[in-house]
Each structure stands twice: as structure tokens, then as C-alpha cells.
Length: 379
Image (cartoon, rainbow, N blue to C red):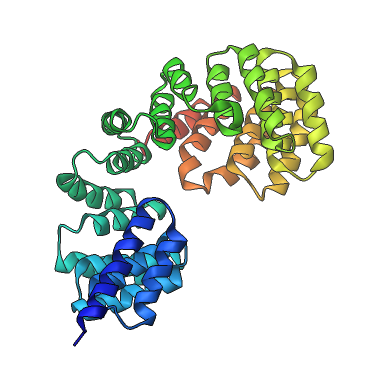
């Protein structure tokens, strides 16, 4: 039995801890809860949960897990405490145990929205988008105006190419949290994916783009698709100023120069990059494409072959090489590469179409028709 003096002291420790937590002094708030434990004044599950919660604010997840374990034990399995124990385990890297604990919390309380969100996020991180959606939609019934849940539903829909629902959900999320840059980013991405490029640019520009190379690159990418090459290069250069060692940005700049017709500058950049990394298949593929646009097919062919060898048969490079060989009427060599491409299921139709075009050019009409039929699934 606690004496009246102990009860007063315990109440005072809790009150001052709550006040310090409210004003942002987390370390001091934890100090008073620690005193509560050290002096044996903690008598209920709520005290242990609150101590665990303070540890989470300080990113001390192992100590948080211990406190939550006491809270679960004393409460005989309260779903809220089980959820928080799962959260601590997840932050400690044990996602399997975390998921088990989230499931346990949901068995005890199907409306434990925090567990529904966390289950959804685990599925989302594993790219299990349909499963993630089911958890988020259940959670949305409980919290219809939660911007985070609406945003995550939108992300799943984006990944599943359900663009109308993605736009609807993320639009609602951005209205609820207009200053959330993550939601604004996803909102812009919806417009980018739908091909509404100027609207995407408008939304990306609402994010603090002056210090964000990724946003600057995305704006540059949009302008490139709009064939406003001057603006595109300007934004990519601004991104390069922020990240001068980022080779990907240089590749993008070179690509835009090539598309704009300034192949000299494009090749100059690619050559510099190749000196730094001569075994990069993507670079070899890109510079080959530039030479191909210049109708220097011999040089392009050699670069495609190098890229194909170094990438261990990248189908994209293989297809580009086939196109280059067809332009030179090197049909036998092209058919050899097509044989490789046919073995990759998702490229089989493209390979058969290329084969049909070659047979057509060779005057083998019957073989060409047969390949076209196979490409269309009319075997």
C-alpha cells in the first residue's frame, strides 16, 4: 500500500513530466518519470506506457520496448500497449515480430487505427500495394480526414496505375495538409504521371526547390518532356550546383542536349563521364544513342555491344542494338540479338515484332506474317 506522501510525490512527478513534455523538454520529462520508477512509485500500466513513449521521443527504442513490455504485462494485453511494443520492435529492425504484435493488437481491437496504419506501411514498404490498400481503407473508415492515410492510399493507387483514385485521395490530403512537402511532392507526381506537365511543374515549384536537387531535376525533366530544352537545362544545372558530384544529373543534361540537337555538347559530357566510369552500361547506351541520331551507326553499334556485354544482356540495350543493326541492314546480326531478347518474357512481343520487320525487309513475307501473328498472340 502506498502512503499518502508517496501518492502525492508520484502525482507531482507525473505532472511535472507531462508539463516538460508539453513544452518540448523531453529529456527532463523522462528524468522525472525515471525517478518515479527508481523510487518504486510507478504502480500502473499507464506510467510504464508513458515512460516508453518518452523514450520513443528520444529514439531510445530498446528502453522504450522494455517499458512497453511492462505496460503490456500489467494491463494483461491492452491493444494500445501491444501496438507500441510492436512499433518499438519495428524501429529496432525486427519487422517480423512487429507485424505479429500489430496483428495481436488488431485481434484484441479491430479498430486500433495505429496498428492498421503500421501494417499498411509494412506492406507498402514491401511493395505489396493491394494488401497495403486493404489496411489503409479500413483505417480510413475510422479516420476519414487523416492526411497521412489519404496520402498513402494515393501512393498505393499510383503504384497500381489507378490514377483517378490516386488524384482524388492525394488532392484531399493536400487540402488537409497544404504545407506538408511530402504530400505536395506526391500530388505533383500524380500530375506528372498523368502527363499534366505544367501542373506538375506548378506543384513542384511550391516545394522549397532552391535547396532540393531532386525537385529541380523533376522540374527539369518536365520541361524536357515539354521540349522546352533551355528551361530543362537551366533547372538541371541548378541541381548540379547543389550536387556537383551527381553523375545522374550530368547524364540528364547530356540527354537534353542530345534531344535539343546539340549533340556536340552531349557527347562531350558523356565522354567525360566515361573517363570516370568506362564500364557503365547506361552511359555506353546513352552515348551510342547520340551517335545513332548522328547516323554514325558503326560507332553506335560498337558502344551498344560494349554496353550489352557489361550489362550481362540488358534487354533495353539489346533492343537499341537491334534497331541500330536494322538501320544498317545487318539483318543476320540483328536476328542473333533478337534470339536473346525472345528469352525474356516481357520483351518477347517486341522481339517478335522486330523479327517480323526484318523478314519483311528481306522479302520473306510468310515468315513476317507468322511473326506478327505471334507478337499479337494469334499463334
